[in-house]
Image (cartoon, rainbow, N blue to C red; front, side):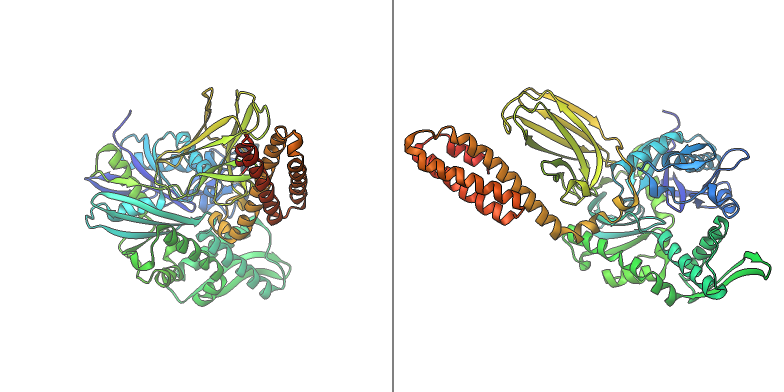
Length: 587
């Protein structure tokens, strides 16, 4: 088991840091440079091994092509970092950051560290959480628990509080934005709702300022800003400094000297950015924070008046416009007595301390950030576990075969809020074999999903008559690109009406197809002369349903299906045969 010591790690997009429990209280661990924050930057050099942290960031302008920033944004994807002849996965790059944090903690504490609690954005999906655990393993850490960043912030805020109250955590880091609503008191931390944007963070504000500064350079010199990586990196650093300065100052001077030179001399960038100008440049980014906030309140069944305290986490919440938006949306002043850069790491240390019995036990009830389900016939997603379900969570549903004599079934597990399977995140798939051959709809297969306290998914499928079963842990099956993970809930809200109409069309088609199969089977029992008129009507109705299906008009398909169902029911009543049962089965 190694030492009893464990640390909490905030593995951030821009900065990472660690904390531990000392005398029952969480404490930030400084790195070897004496700083509390370690830049989440890795540089691959020709001489020796990789550089990590401040050393990597310092040389970024001179070595831009081999310096990696914001790798957290690619966790869970098949993205590769190329360095010379080698390629590194996001997990491997993140492991280098974690390895430095671990080594710095060991140096400071004077003992070996082999266990940690690592935080992730609340909106990380299963693949991103698995990738984070893998990075910890590669760094030589036993990852005791993956905990959501806003939940960690809530732990840091509320560990010693006995009064029952409701808090909302706004976590704007370098690359992600999370909103969590929690009820806490008497040692219980219950997450009521989470929402967020996986591709909104301080980096995006920096990029917006950098783009503006490029335009200023073009206006001053009559030519585009150079594409040289070193110049671009210096510009990004200047943009970040201006953003930070504008958090408290009304304006920020920007000077980037010696960008390029020719026969006429050197060219520099000199500009001044006001706070009003900055807020105009980034107004749309700021407004993207409103949607997840409103959604979280809606999911929790609350209004702003129900929130007792607003907690800010993540260095980007220091921007004055962010704090002002929090006041406007939630009608209260954010809590000012926690360092937003450090609060997540402190909460992670508290969680580690609870697992080791070093601090007072608290009951932590987190939730699933995105719905889990499987793909069904017609390319739809059937939800088995809705988002905001408390963890651990489980859900199951019984499905039937779609074809006669079908002996296998593909199980495709999805995560997201859209109606169409293709619009959600694919977590993995497998095939269940051994289904007894029978008429379609006869075999019954139970699919069950389980999400543990880390939000990691397991899936099982079982054919109920033979008890044949398959169980697998989810693995990454394809690359996650930027467009797949950007604003999942926001996308779902914007496409809700379109998705609803599409689901109705697909469901109408599936019901009609099932009804046609039931009707054609029913005709076999209507072969006597007395039923000739009914048979003719049913055959005509079948043809009309098929024509409506071909037209793609769901309203007409439902109308024709209802008429066919009425004829089948009438035939059932007249003859007291199995036709009625078959007709009902076709609904």
